[in-house]
Picture 1 (spheres, rainbow, N blue to C red):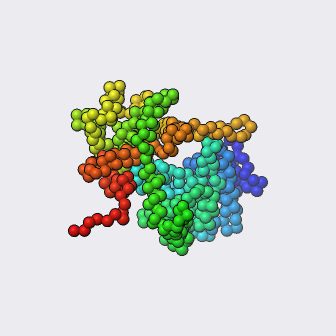
Picture 2: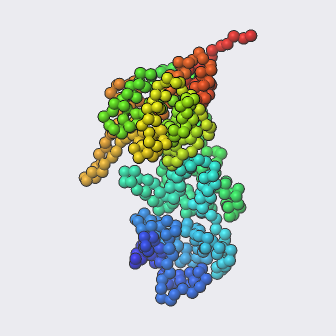
Length: 478
C-alpha cells in the first residue's frame, strides 16, 4: 500500500504491507542504508524498513506509534551531529534485531566510533521470563506475568470495548540507560499496584546483570526505587492502634480477628443441606448438573481444583479411600500437582452419605472422570463459579449508553432471599466441612489428626482457626 505522510515536516513515511507496517525512507537517506546493508540498493526505488516483527500491525494505535518512530529517526538522521545521535543497531528505537546488532562490533560511522547500545527493557524482560517459566508453575506464570508483559508492551485491556489500547510510548522499547524515557513510559501505566510491577522489573534487571546481559557496566538499575522512598503503608500506620466498636485496640488484637472472620467462615449444617438440595431441585439444568459436585465439595472439604480432574481410578471402593494427587489449573485448564505438592488420602465410612453419592455416580458413568461435563471433558471452573455466584454482563446500546444485567447464581439468590444467613464463596465448602467435622470430633485427638491429614492442613490450624482454641488458656504445671 502507498506510504502515508506522518506530518507536514516528516519525510520518512509509514506504509502498510500485508497487514504489517513499514517505514519508507527518502532518497537522501539511501547512501546510509547502503552502508548499513553492506550492498548497493536498487536505483530509483525507495528503501523500506519492515516493522512487522516488532509487532507493528495495521491498526490506528500502531500507526501512531510508527509515526512517532519515523519522526524520531528523521530527527536523528537530519541533525548536524547525526553520527552521535543515530544508532545503527536500531536498538535505541526499540526495533533492533540480531542482524543489526552485529553492526555495533564492525561499523565505524564517519567522525565517531559507534558506542555499544544498551539492551531494551523488552529484551531484559524476555530473558527474565525465560528463566521464570522454569521456576514457577504454569498457572502462576500466566496469571502473574502475562498481565505485566502486556503493560510493558504498552497494551491496556479496555473491558467495555473488548480490545487492547496501545501506548504511543511503550516501556519495552526503552533502552535501560534511558532513565527519562523509562520514567515517562511508567507514568503512562495506570494500575493499582504499580509498585509491584516496578519491583519485578528491578528483579529482572538484577537477573540480567548476574547473567552478563547488561552491556555497559555503568548502567544502573532504572527501576530501583531506592531505600529512602516512603512505602505505601508506613511502619507507623501498620502498627497503629485501631478503633473497633468504639474501643481502641492494638494492631495485634485486631489482625487475628480479621483473618479468622475473612478466611474461615463457614455455613451451618442446615445451610449446607439447603444449598445442596437447592442445586438438585433447581429449575436451571446447568445448576442441577453440578449438584453432585457441590455435594462432594461439602462432604470432603477438598479444594475446588482437586475434584475436577478426579478419575475413578482415584477411588478405592473396597478400602473406602479417595486419592487426591492432582489439581486443575484455573487459568491454564491443565492438570498439575496439588497445592501442597503432596498426595493426600481421604477416608470415608462404609455407610456414609459420601459413599452412596459416589456409587450412584459410578453407576451412571460412561467415562474415566468422576465429574465430567456434558461432553465427558473437564468441568470448567468458571461454569461452577457462575452457577454458585453468578455474573454481571454489560450490553452496549445503539444510543451509546450501556445497560447492565445481573445474573445471580444459586447461592447468591438464596442469600438475597434470606434462606441462608449470608453469601460465602464456593471455597467455603471446604471451611464448612472442616468446621463441622472438627466440632463433631473436638474431643478425639486421633480424629482431628485424621481430618487434618485428609484435608491437607495441620491439627494446629484446626485448633486455632476452626475450633477457636484460646491462646491465653493456662495449663497445669507438673
